Length: 195
Figure 1 (cartoon, helix red, strand yellow):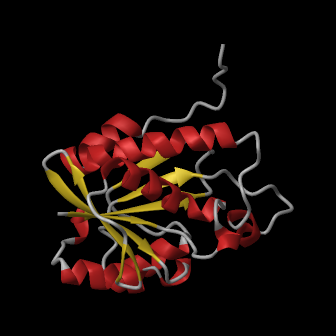
Figure 2: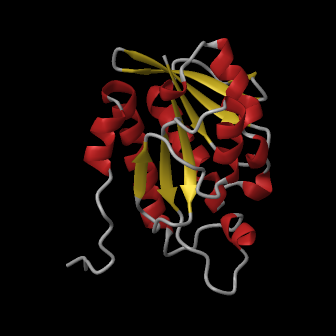
């Protein structure tokens, strides 16, 4: 059993913001793999899913980003999961839009939802899939930036990365973190031109 956690903030005003990219990927995963209707549990919404022969659970914490661990810890305890069987989907301002990176463990990198989960689980050995939302322009406050929506010009790349990330999560469930790091963690070449 694997637990896939998409991070975001509840409420209409946060819908489709950079901070909620984890929820967008979870919604795509639910469309592709759900085997149950969403249920309210663990201060969140949970959906059962099937990935080939593997079972998964899709969890959307509804605690607001900074308290995500309040949802993840009880779910982890209830299903008796090891931290390595949990994958956190979250936004990352240090990655360009349209890129993603798997990490098996490490610090939160300033992502407050991830920070709270690490704190509540008592370990940083929690796999995560970081999805690039781009860096804030110089005059922008980081908090305001992650709560802003993607620009029209960014949307095609976002739609593409949501699809790709959903496929990558299915690979994680079935093949593990090393397979996914080798397959998906290519360096982003900012000089490449589409011809």
